[in-house]
Image 1 (cartoon, rainbow, N blue to C red):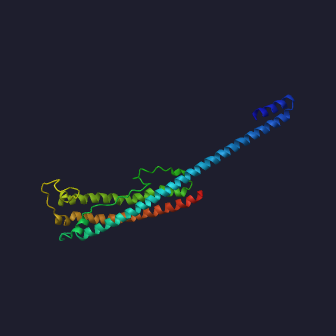
Image 2: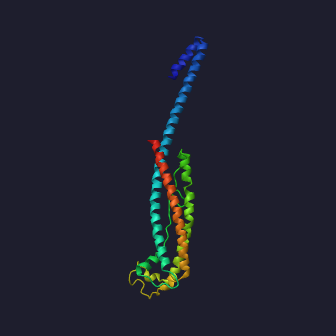
Image 3: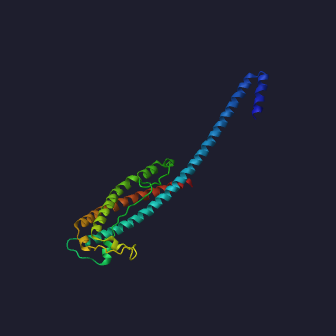
Length: 248
């Protein structure tokens, strides 16, 4: 094709038809420009197609991740409900004049735990590798980026609860012999005489009761903020599912 155009140019020059040569050269330039524009358009179309495919994959992954977050939130809400019941039971059976309750109640009081939620797209997750810049929807992208802020409000009472629970365990260890109550030990593993448990001393300890009251306050606060995180998570999920409709 190039040789064909070259022969036409040479023929026009040999025939001294300079004006027609200029018109021809101009036409050839226009054809080249049109070819370049078409090539650019095809390239842009391919890039857009690839980018849209990548964006779709990001949206699908985000839907998967925030669905997992919702499942985790449901789990931790149940854990907080259980923790709240333990706290209520503890407060009913601690004080200066209480007596030792039934074994099942005492076992409940000894459940010294607190939930610690772990969610994707928060600072405590190492799996936040999604490139959110691929999302064209600025509102959706900002909604995801602010997810951390709501989780921070929840995490403050959570950290306090973890500290309070550790303090409860230290008090528990002052009165209760762990080697005597540890169920994972086989009989005869440690044949020495165990320390005696002081169950009443444990239940009548004012510091233990005060810490439990503090846990009650912070548990209520953690539940409140975790529900806000749940609402935010639900909002993101709804927006993502709506965004996915663009690719159908």
